[in-house]
Length: 121
Image (cartoon, rainbow, N blue to C red; front, side, top):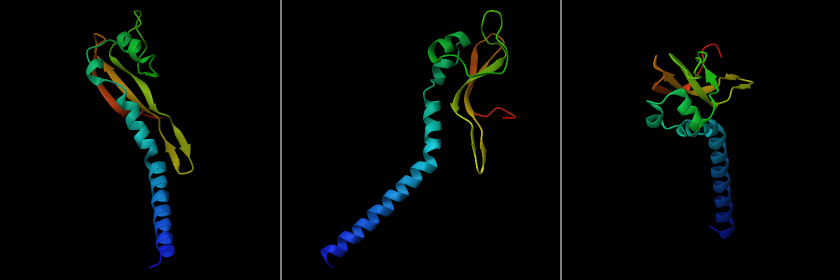
């Protein structure tokens, strides 16, 4: 086999690998982005804190299931941060997702949930 033919075969293989890599990145890119968005939240730190303490560290909540009480805290409900925006495409709608924190009757976070989708969109 000549050096020219080896170079041609190598070039074709390299192009195929690069195209496959590009397709994989485009296809899985949003999934990887979603995973990393939820990773920025420290569940161990959040559990046991009230909504004011959490907002002080992570910023204002993007989603609230109940109104705040007169002291500005959340009781008996959930609040969350947007981790993936809604996308409307030709093949349907990909709903928005949140990192949600659940609060008990004392206003203390007791549970978190990744990739939460609001009912009804």
